[in-house]
Image (cartoon, rainbow, N blue to C red; front, side, top):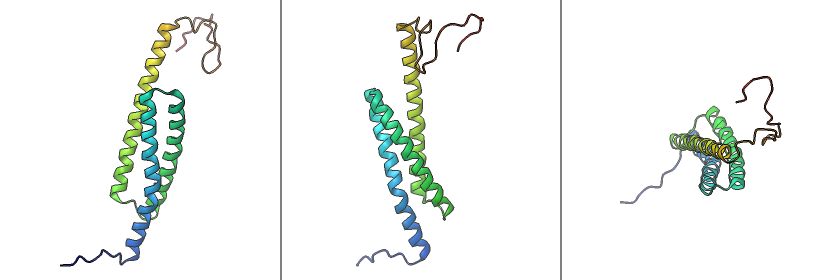
Length: 138
């Protein structure tokens, strides 16, 4: 018995295949950027984290644009929707890991430099001097 090669016969099938092909590149880029950010987070390299986060942001914006256009033009194949949902979950997990790392760093700085807020300048350049009005700074 010889296998007959699968042939697309309708215009709708051809458009679906083309749509899937067009979505593959931005989705692959997004997945690669997620991996790069994960690796940067694992090494705690601040410069690499910042670079990877910027690249991830751009890849995510491009993927969302492509997927939104495909959804308007007839839909996104289920396997690609599932991959995008998985990538979205990974973005959320990395955001949470980064928030935890930032909180830990803030606590360490508070322990090591408890008087940093008295008369110095913070990371944003604003004076950290205590106010004489009795208000609390958060």
